[in-house]
Image (tube, rainbow, N blue to C red; front, side):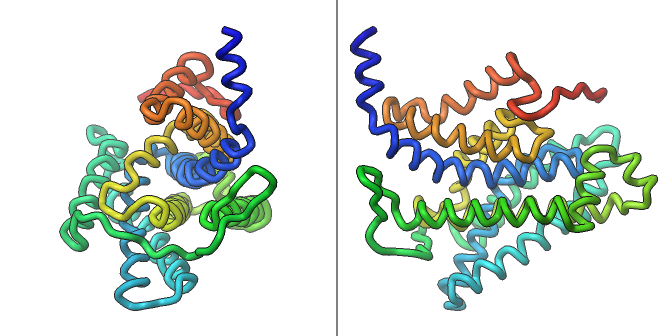
Length: 299
């Protein structure tokens, strides 16, 4: 036991935490989109990873075929991601949400499979290298090394979280989305257009997934199945933080990222298992998550 404690103390904790925060930022952004869609539309989406992948291929086309600057390609992709998310809600989910037999959650599973097939048909299934937005020597802070890409991920996550906080706190649309998330019936009685909020929720959630895909593609690879592991970890992060809490999604993503970094350093083969384990443990011990509330719904 003493040797185990010593081995834990000898781990490069500072480096593992920094790596975990960068990795957890990707989980947090994806989980935030999942929770945002759930809170505004009352639908848990299992297509978040696939929409992120599809948007990443669109960004790849802008960068390689059209030779657009990265910032321009990034912004255009986010605009198209918002439109894609809004169309998914308007054309597909809004039509099945009133059905009594088909569950919208199952529809999102099918939607994910469709997006994988379309991406494979259009761009192919071979692995591609995604152009990196930054390059150069890593940043060094004592014994801690931070790559340029991880630094960009942290900066983008912080900026997006500030922008989203301001949006939900001060803008009329953000306040309306918070009202719908708290009580859909009361919000509708107050004159808030629920269908419009649903479309915007899907659009913003899809855009956040697109950011994750664009940031993770240069680190790993680009292919139709690139987001499988990230989507799973993001779902675990949403469960950990609480599906009823947007801040919980961020906290859950960062915590899971640190856990993933430490476990991956010690026992790499358990990196995926830890996500399933967290989902089971949280649902058993605290079903509402760390910052969420436990809700019982009649289905």
